[in-house]
Length: 554
RNA sequence: UGGGGUGUAGCCAAGUGGUAAGGCAACGGCCUUUGGAGCCGUCAUUCCCAGGUUCGAAUCCUGGCACCCCAGCCA
Image 1 (cartoon, rainbow, N blue to C red):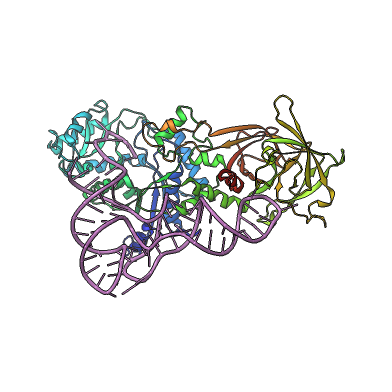
Image 2 (image 1 turned 30 degrees about the vertical axis):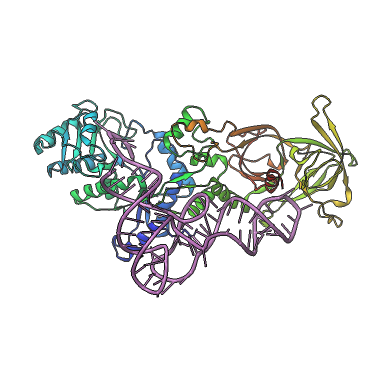
């Protein structure tokens, strides 16, 4: 895929020209295993792995696992699965920040010996008080000038577990008056008697992000350390650690994270949606998680296309979810097998069609790709069509079935509606009586007669019953921000249809297989699907010109 | 009010002193046995605003304005 140029690629091109890293390009994708990956991560994955691929470099997968309280093995597994599924590979370059705990500890000792780090006994609250504010400088901790020997001793005893949680920290000695709050003696280590998903109980002090990240990049000889905008303020600290340690120095570059309309992207909120039961889990098809999108029916190709189309820049932006949907349609239009499925069936009896006859009619599997071939579909006297494709009192420009009107049944005959049967009590239409024109069979010499509309159908006798889940956006509001974001959750984001009728060729469909239900949209087989009990997810609708016409009343 | 960023169409986004790419959306039209797909066309005399430099400015300079991020022992 021809990845577009962007400002990061410009920087890399320049570095290549000046031979800054002797021709190497080495990136990394560094998720914290504290949740499932979402489409914002997909952007970052495509960026980092895409650059590596494009420049014939490498991209590491590194778990930023420095906070045992929030991290779990389940997440490290799901993350690997998602990155692979997206189409990327880290070969033997799977790393963990926790792999470097010992090395990081030694680096810290080095800084202490250099007089650039100290053990501080201030409590979290006191540290906050000493930090100052945005406009006022902070004050030095009274522990700032401990001797190197005392710092070394205390730090070692921190590691040994002599102090309770929060009792002491190791801090970098930088500048409490810096206008950049990140430089006001940031914490490098905190005491945390917690079991880590990989190192178990080996450690009771854990490095902070700032202390672990740059040094991990350095150890892995990363050239371009790409992260999101909120870390721009951390860059001076990133550089400071590397410079004081005098070790290999990668370059941090920040880009704007992805925001999408009608959804939330923060891991915290996604976790809450899961824990508070608004969705069925991290992989609920309404979630913007990679696993949710996968279950919904999004393909790796469509997500990569999306990443490419939205570009990479430094300005905060919110991408219209319609852009995402279009990427799926774009991909699936070329590949998805077309089938007929009736979501809300209404029975049709062709009165002049013989009772016991079943015809096999030929249908094209994909008009975009002749190599996908054709199949036979059964036609008989009793059919189902979509409720929506009949109107007793048709509005203007309605090209479908109505009393006395003609419509073509896709790949079959032109029929005319002769009678409407209704439930006497409710007035609901229960059955349509029609006649067909035997001369109009698709493919036959006389089939060229034109009618305005063509609708899909399924033969009643041979159709399979299926469950179809229709999804709508998870939120009613374009930008559900703020503390009351839950108020904008769309209560109708899921509609389950249990009486759908689908064509027999779908009998063997397996989870994650994708189809186009003609005239309706793209549908994927859900993981809940069982033989005899098929379940489909509507991944995305087709563009619906009629819906637009009807809505605007033109 | 300190520091760091960002302002180009409804939404993304190119553009790096030579006269505003592309995509999504929208709107017309053609075509169509999916109201799908495809095809054609329309959609910024103007780039946050105001000055200035220049033959020429979205690009350079000056001054404003708006929005985002930072006061976790989260990442």
